[in-house]
Image (cartoon, rainbow, N blue to C red; front, side, top):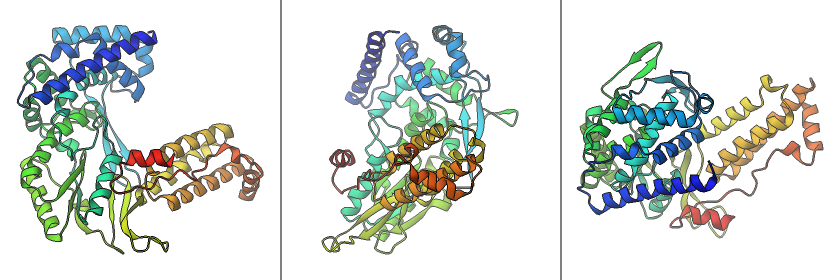
Length: 447
């Protein structure tokens, strides 16, 4: 498809989303009745396919991959989906359940992989309903929302600690994606959507179940993690928590999906915040993860808080000109550091000894750029030095093993090359956060 045509269709989809957002924002009590036909729109389905293809992903239980769809014919697939959705014969397949390790931990996270065709339909539904609910979501919610990121949530922690909120109630919601009750979720959806065909489609997605150990499991709870639409539905349900917090909570709530903090000025306020949080979640049929729930006082020499991959700690400046200033510093958490080391080790493993060195270094660079791109917005100089030194040592060992030589051979070969075999350096990439300065502005100043 020509670029001009693709751009025109994308503009139409964005216009649809803006229209829905403005209508929802203008009337908080409005319930939308005519949405199903918008899911069927050709430009919406094509945009949904583009998003699914860009996200790649594995095959579902039907074993159909992105490449298979392209070989089969994208237009053909979208035509078939449009017909099935229009005549009501569309039925989502159960998702394929896999378990992936959590970075730096022994426990595993369940991940549900819908079929490609089901991911396209979910993406189309998300395109239509997300702007409506986005008009309602509160400023304390940051996860999986347009024009919001983890660093926006992290900046709130920096700003509020500077204003004296140094008592933190830290936790996350236990098995959030698996525990959300379908009845409560659909009730939350129906606060804004009254299109019966779309509601029926959403119920079918929730009831499709997952294929695990050869058996399909259905349940009355859960919006399986891994589905395209699951983050939006999770936010729709947890919006009830955000609303209730305004009336019953204590301190300032910062929520990124199911990870949350309550920032308070006193210990008593933090304790009341934990009581309120527990009660509100109980009303929603959810609970806190006991192992991650605690109250922390941010103070010099204190233990600090881990949030969104960063370890946060209250420290004092080290130079003569800054010793009078105490502030909240952050750097990659122990789990994030271990994940980086493990990934570097995988990319320089023995089973890659026959690979060209350029390909191994290219894979290392891609990972290091992505990892550093997230953690550079912090006080991460020491940790970056540790990771890059680890990458250098692993590459030197890989070079030595590929030549069946001792490690010192790889070290000498590495240092003999002024280009370091193309391995990137992370020096000069840090952008330390500042209170009351948007993190993007700080990043632009750093560049």
